[in-house]
Length: 303
Ligand code: GUN
Image 1: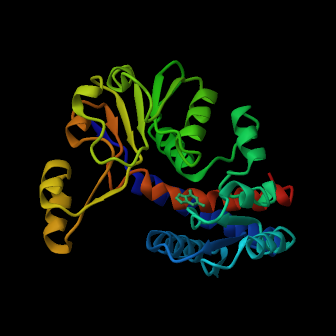
Image 2 (image 1 turned 180 degrees about the horizontal axis):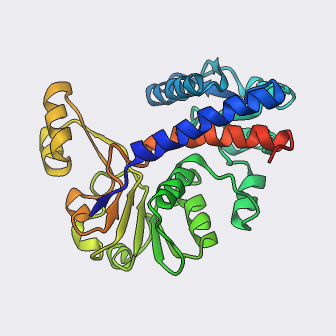
Image 3 (image 1 turned 90 degrees about the horizontal axis):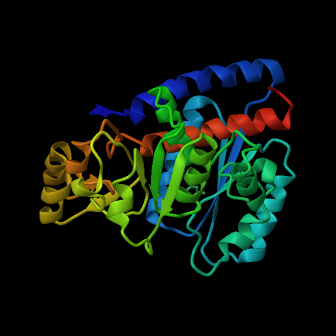
């Protein structure tokens, strides 16, 4: 049972990226530029955006946040995207999701220049992933790939079961694992016999947002367990039942505990697993910076 340490993988990548940005600056006189658009006041999104801005600053990425009020209107958001598409100093644009419910997310994402779409959510980029014609991927599944790579875990011929079909994690993850020669089953809320299917997984990626959903009886001995869940629990009974010891201690001080989608007892059966917190969550923002650098290089023809 080896812990796949997201903090370690993120720190190693950040060190390399800091150096690469310095060398790109020497070569071109410029640094990669990332602009994040956030619409409305969703508190979780505000925290994510602040974290992105902090990491950009620490690596020397030129980062901007554009804050728009919830009622700004579709035309104003699209006008802002068009302005950024045409700004040569902007290499990467991210629209923080979820957008307030009144907006049509796909319609707005369609306006992103695919070459500046750092999330890789534009349909053109989704298509490139599915036919294996790109090496830039959505940040969360890309972080998972980097963790598996770092621990020399080869996926060829393995049965990977992905639970959750979001366009942010599950769907791109399934395509990426397929490209790495895994045999992939993509499960979701309408899947019947879910436990039976998960039990066949040599690798299980859980991205559903339900605390402790994948229980010990659903996983096979020696499976590699990747937990994308980030669930905040406020009831003491839930925290005691689902959280690891360190989170139970923290609950006593701050009134909430964090746990993933995979039950702690399931990890005991695994060969490798990503903890929550301390696993996948820590590599997502790192990969956003990584993608920003890749887009900078791609736009300038630097290999
Ligand atoms: N909200 C939650 N995850 C993400 C992500 O990866 N990208 C964006 N833009 N919004 C998110």
